[in-house]
Length: 139
Image (tube, rainbow, N blue to C red; front, side, top):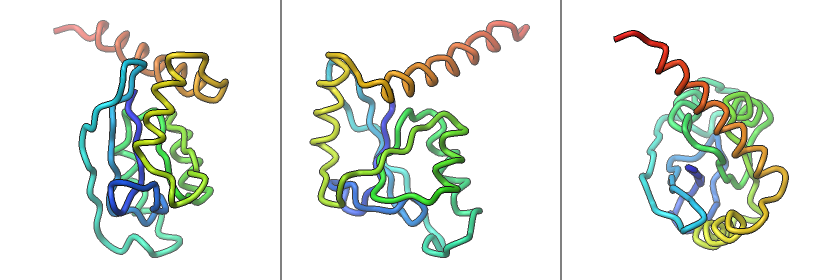
């Protein structure tokens, strides 16, 4: 599954979702994790009430299961959930991406908590539906 982190230094989960200029994306399995890419965003990201700034981020995260943030507004959280992306607020801006990734790998090896099972199940359901649609398209 793909997991994203809002970050300013690529080490800590220290950026507000709407204000984040960088979002790091990793692939996480029960075997480990791998860095995939950094998504970059620019413009006036600190402007409150500017819902247009959210759309490029939400579209860029379309295939992510979870996005970790230091903070997120209600509107942004609702829009992510509608796209079956689960926003998770870090405990503090000192939380390190690597520590969260390591814990996720351990969790996937064991018995994931209900919220994670639900996020994984929603993502798999969407992917299955997309596979079904692709199979039905005549070539």
